[in-house]
Amino acid sequence: MIKDLVLKNRSFRRFHEDHRIGMEMLEELVDLARNSASAGNKQSLKYVLSNSERMNERIFPHLSWAGYLKDWEGPEQGEKPAAYIIILGDTAISEKFYCDEGIAAQSILLGAAEKGLGGCIIASIDRKPLRKVLKTGKNFKIRLVIALGKPKEKVMLEEAKGGNIRYWRDKEDVHHVPKRPLEEVIVKKYFE
Image (tube, rainbow, N blue to C red; front, side, top):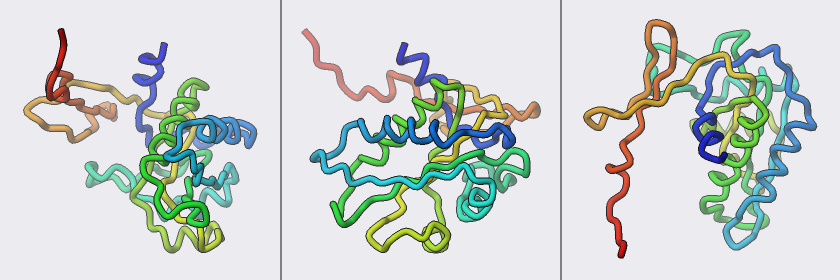
């Protein structure tokens, strides 16, 4: 059921780093994105895939993790992602990407969740130095980075109280994610 898959798909930030993800699996996930909707059907997104420990170590320093957790600098050694999918916008096809990268990222993460993996969409990226690491052409703009791996943390959804949507970790290191109630996000209903 799609609801179960959506609820299983959380933003995981700590992984079993030694759990390898094969290139074929990464290609399957990108294939889900490739077959997803695209504004104007321009299909202007391209992808860089890495399951190389060496390349992953070069990608990692250019990413920011969990802005609300001020005392946490990100995954430690042994908890880092096993793979990355970097979503690029190809300006040779289009200068605008609309919501394509969001659709692609969600498709990738739902596919990962179905396969027992987890991930995190990262938009807080030091793009200029990462471009140098990736050695992509000037027509490619880094849109998002998806960190992937076998989750090493527990993430719990809960009802947001008093409008506070800041995620947090408890004493057992469980990651809590408050969600606004359904009645708060539906502004109007028109029905007969």
